[in-house]
Image (cartoon, rainbow, N blue to C red; front, side, top):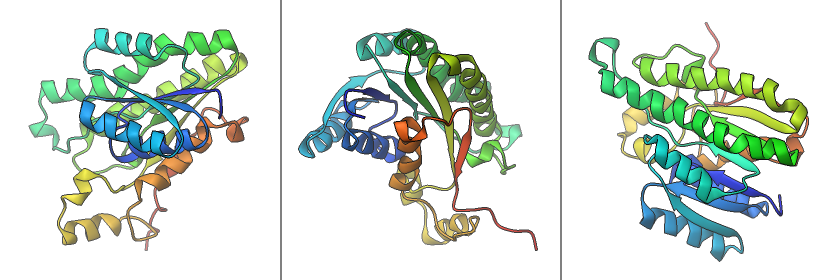
Length: 242
């Protein structure tokens, strides 16, 4: 992916960090997005220490004007990874309008705004790749995920629409739907809870961020040149019934 510029949102930790590191390893110049400059500098330093090229851009993805600024500062982007997001698990009776809006703004509207800003340049240049991070919960009913899963299901529908819209212009759009993945959130879980989460997968364990990143980077790379409009599950397999 030498000569390509990749913007990864939410790239200062977890799956986003792993994606940024792997894209740089593939030769891409990586724009590391986040809200914490110190963590962003750490990821940039990690990439540079391994011979890669990266820079950090801070932006608040709940602010439409800040998203536009991020797109402008990013400049010519060949690969867009919409990774940043939020999840809060609550029963419907405890959801608030503010939390619902936050999920839609971060998980759905921010990717939409970035695609609207950056995809035209990809179309003009005749090539590009967009990968959206979804979730298994968008397809499998999961207790307490109403806000989260609906915002990601909307993102999956946008993925399909964008794939059809941009295909003839050489721009591919796909999504990756991870299952349980090791993050700062899972690291805070007690052993019993973590075991329960792991046992929801056929493999009986949660994913490492790097395992999910492999799928994201594959779909973003020329190796996936004939793949568009798919949602690739990286879930450790689903359990059988009975």
